[in-house]
Length: 149
View 1 (cartoon, rainbow, N blue to C red):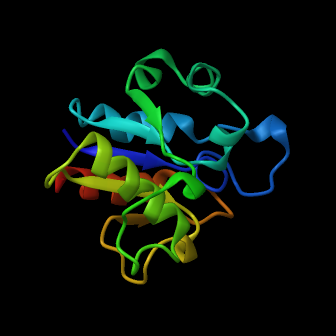
View 2: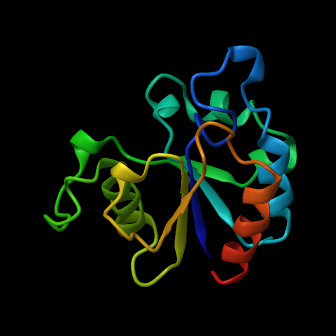
């Protein structure tokens, strides 16, 4: 089953926006994920450091919340990952989760607005413009990527 690692700030709402705008792009994510019934979501956002999984899931529409199955491990808790990945914190966290929970060759995609948290040319990264978040144009591209998972 494919996994989508989800950042919040810069993806579900513009980076550095007022909290009244938080999660304003969630309907775009719901639209994209609705096309893939077999997709699990794992929260990779830093919000996971201050909120529990049930609190995070409460921010989402029910259909999307049911797909959220976990959060990535903290970078400081990671062990036995390749050294080439370790400088790229978010990718290392995603790979750490995959190694424990989906060993083998399961497919994944990370939806994020910060490319420096991933190795250059990371094929699993779906980059979102942090100034706009996941807008309609990005959703069209995301749907195309999800179809290839």
